[in-house]
Length: 120
Image (cartoon, rainbow, N blue to C red):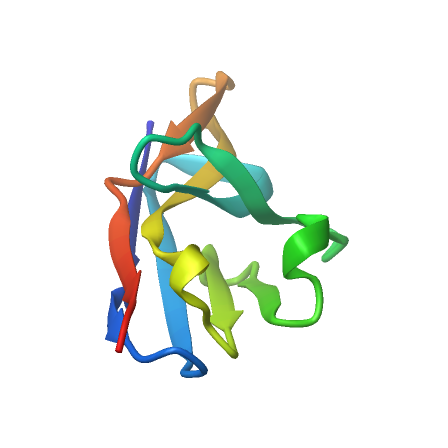
């Protein structure tokens, strides 16, 4: 079993920065990949960025250059640094991780979501 806890959302002005953090806990044997997704009001959840245990990253094309994902394998955490934020980045951001537990089951887990609002 695993659990993801996010932090770091909030209100920021256009052009500002925020850093989101997500920590995985539980009976974890390994985490194949971790990542961030977001869902804006009235829209479907979409990929923001993912990072593998081998630190291979993947970004939504529209976010490359502004967002940076990083991972600390020893701490089972993933960070999302968001720079030059725009109003269209306003959404609930969800952490995701594919975790193998001591039962050897591999499941996708989701955090509860953290609100990011970009507004002047």
